[in-house]
Length: 471
Image (cartoon, rainbow, N blue to C red; front, side):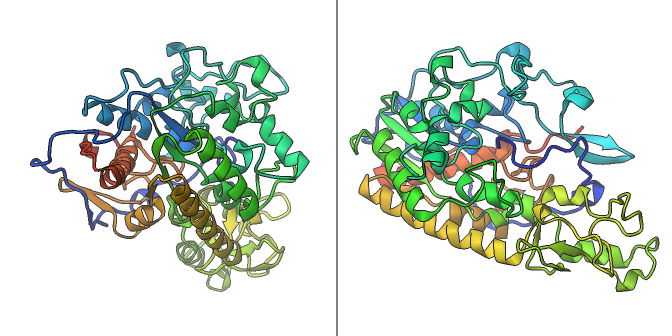
């Protein structure tokens, strides 16, 4: 459950994707040379702690690895906090050892069959030559990663974690509450942070309660809808956290988290809400209309003009896909592939007879997408009310990411957009930011913190951070 989509040895989004262009620009964010001197105002950042999920950890390109972890938005915030003279002397990230610097491994663009394509590291391709941190010591938990043994980290981000899985108090269902308590045996990224004695008994809220911050940031809640969405609305019966979290459990869990990290409202900080995940490249890179147009124009298909793309919806209905359905990024490597029972030209999804529809896990159908958007709004209402109760500002990432998805963002005359690969902001997993994207995110945190507390923390120049790495 710590990966966001099934690992394919070779995904197949090729050069056609690279043509999806730049040029969407509108939201202006320029650096101001006349900005006032850096000041913390009433804040004390000497012990800054960041809690959250993969976005907080610095996850990118489908993995957690030292290079991007070093420019996670909390690391960038700590750097900027330091300019006020009240920053942390040392912001500790739970990095991997230098010999295993590539951590869980990460997707690379490589030339496959004459075209550039994102390739996922695996044992079968020798992890693309990366220095990964899998120990191989536990056959029952093959994804076990090298344990972190340094000083207690200040970046406490755990990829894959949700509010429901973070707090053993969130759910009253014993199975779910127990799974949250045993989360250190289920999530390899959380496991590596814990001493062996705590791995089956310490939930994340108890873990973050061990810290005594002077300032905190919290960005949790995304996986309470994202896990369901990226699985095409398919719930894994073996994973108690794979459905969308109900509002009652989310409210209990979120209050538990903020009460713990604020020490019952005595520590200052900021929280961020949940973006509309249907706007990210994972769901926007493979438009239904483009796929259908390609099918109808394919000269290898008999009766191509009468063929189309057929999907299996969440209710098991097979029907023609519409523009309201969202195809996932991995769907691109599946659509059109033949099988033993359906040899080409009746590849997956291609059929005028609906004989071989695209499986439900590769599409967030219109009903499922609407449900995700509605639940996100409900959870964001809870976040806003809880933040008000604990007197901390909300960084409205929902509005901010929608603006980027709609108009892009320009910094010092450089255009960036939400386009896959070419937009500079989203990494090769289609979900998480690139280093430049994390710098843009950090600036939004800084803007809100300054506005709320009256501090003058300087912004970053995102242009000095990279987008997607090209071979």
